[in-house]
Image (cartoon, rainbow, N blue to C red; front, side, top):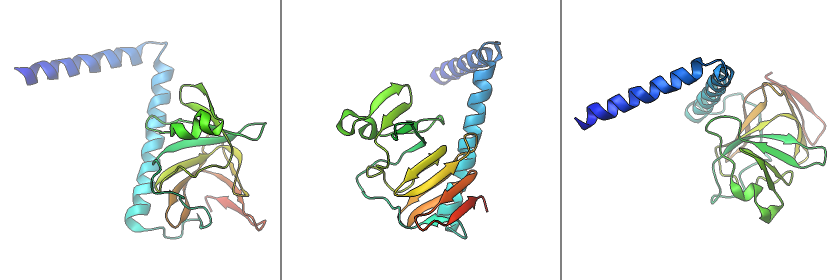
Length: 183
């Protein structure tokens, strides 16, 4: 009896969600959410491929590695502000931004649901397998990432370096070498 009631409640919830998605006001929201979930699934599939098959010939920046084993596995977009700070955004439904990166301890302030300003360049709280998406021109440890806004350069932070996952853009390394991705 309890399972039948739970099944009915779940069906009722699904009907409510479908009705909300069908309304003219929320159709755009539902379409955007579906697209974000699709993009996150593609990103996750690429990361699983890296973890199961190895790096292969993927572009890697060996100088940028996790600095801690006590940090947080997270994922977020990074944009530079005109003042030279970072704007971290939880763009995808399952994105996670560690509060310590945006808290008063390091000067960050909450700007809205899922967005935080923080000091540029500090990834010391991030564990291996954290995902960084670079939107626009962003500098990290002297390396300039220029990712497309609609298809940001996405990297996973691994023990052996920051490794390219997906996205389009250009990277200028400390030695002046420039790399376009995907190659």
